[in-house]
Length: 150
Image (tube, rainbow, N blue to C red; front, side, top):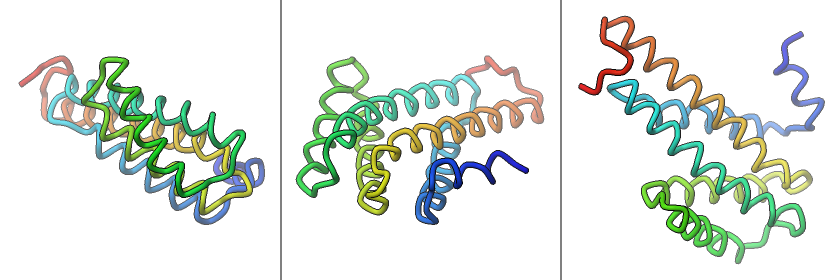
């Protein structure tokens, strides 16, 4: 039995959760796959940082309150503000998009809404790992050095 066979039973994931998770992992992989390994790693750090900000804000909100329409712009604005304050203004768009996805997913699956930030972080980590591995394998296949910045 595969781990993926156990996850829906353990976390009670719906079909919508499965689809969002798969799509989010693919987006993360595409987001970090760059022309050099160094650029891929930089994009991976950016993606993880933005997702971590979104995780903290959305989890803090969803742990106590159900999804409300007014929370969407408030939390998106807060996620942008936080990444600016921590000195990563380039991650603002990614944090805003991640926050929007997490909140919309929590509206789709309101029974376990607090799990959405955690699941999206897991999806992002899987996608980032695949994107970085693909970049590394692509460089190896073309004979370039992993640290090269050309």
